[in-house]
Length: 95
Image (tube, rainbow, N blue to C red; front, side, top):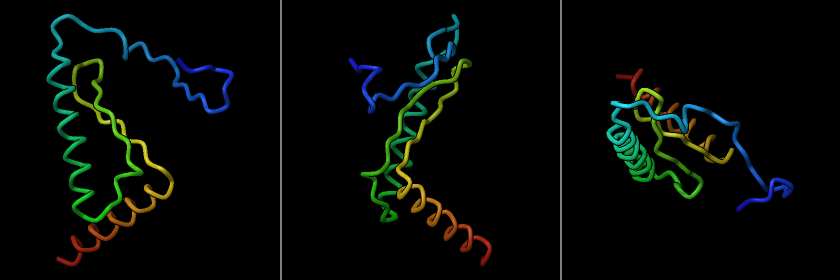
């Protein structure tokens, strides 16, 4: 348990969509898709030489059951990802 008085305690605002499930919505399929997508992203970044130690992702679902990947990066990792995407974009424009 985290102590909210602790300076390192991080809290997210309450989101009712995170706890309310709707009957008939396949949340498991959405979560599974998000888990696969997050793992795929991490694998591709690692194969491109990106240090995945600064990458933290979490599979989630929206209220409608679609998969979502929450990605948390350090500032340095975000700069590296931005540089990687820029390089890929330049290659695409050169074709």
